Image (spheres, rainbow, N blue to C red):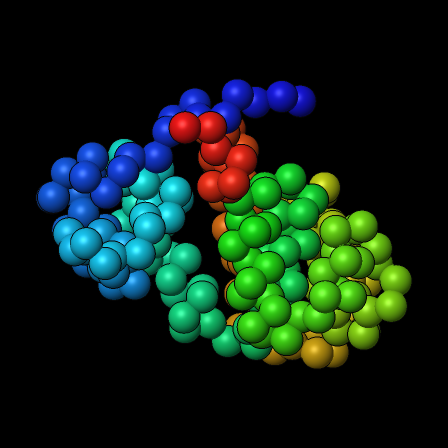
Length: 191
């Protein structure tokens, strides 16, 4: 399957309407540093430039995603393992590149990243293996089997189990959007 990169190109910082920027900042305070009109502001992530096309949608999405990233009950390592497994299976290079850094920061090793890249399910702990099986089942069958649920229940409480489902669903949805609009990592973008 081939998708032309840039079906909806991200807006630049200067191309974002000030009202849209304010809506995004209110919903996702971490975006403030990227949207600041200052010479030393960091580069605007392409995903923020993309979402700026629809600030109301962006505000809801960023609030939801911010809750998962900043206020979740899952340990960051488990959350990043779920995200990386989803985006690997869905071929979402942009999110893979962003979350490899976060995954390393959360304790995922380079060896584990290599196993994820190869879609290997060998050599994982019981809880990691159950998380990865859940991703496989959710991405392919849209449900977690009883056996995988039982294995997950031995390591995670009900809040964490519910959050796990939302993390996988959130990043599967994001994969559909980013893959369809052709958002690619900066190093792959043609200018």
